[in-house]
Amino acid sequence: NHNKIPDLIFKQDRAKTQKKKKEDPSVIKEQEVAKIPSCMFFQYNTQLGPPYYILVDTNFINFSIKAKLDVVQSMMDCLYAKCNVPCITDCVMAELEKLGMKFRVALRIEKDSRFDRLPCSHKGTYADDCLVQRVMQHKCYIVATVDRDLKRRIRKIPGVPIMYISNHRYSSSLC
Image 1 (cartoon, rainbow, N blue to C red):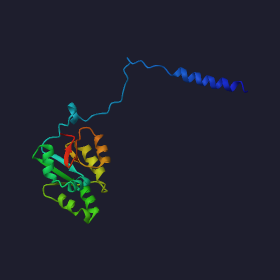
Image 2: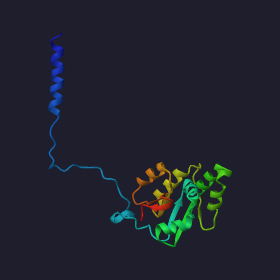
Image 3: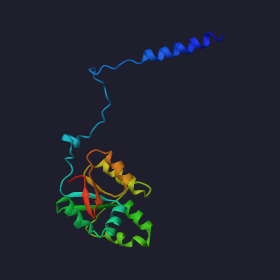
Image 4: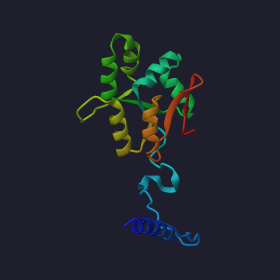
């Protein structure tokens, strides 16, 4: 019995070494390619153009206030366009209202007449999911956020630019 066990181990080791073969680099490998939507023709978004519709996140407004930036004017400076339409979803408004009196300045800014209000048809008030869902459906938005997790999620969607704050001014992946 003792003699048979080492033979089995050696046979298994030999089988493992035989299975490893060098791959031929000249052979073309089939890879699974992600399907890109038709609006991404020539690797840029044809639906995106002036007037720019900018989906604003809660923390973007709060960081703009901390950096003492006028939201609409800074967006114009960033995008080099006069026709920018900042948009706020119901979820973002609800999120700001939940934050309370500490963020009343941000709430007052978001209720400005220059901001477009976008109604939400889904249940719940989690703004990040709402923004990602809206951007996936319509590729005509720029997403303004400072949130790392939301940026990471939006970068996975091809053709959606992100506006963020760096060095006390707005920057965008579009410019």
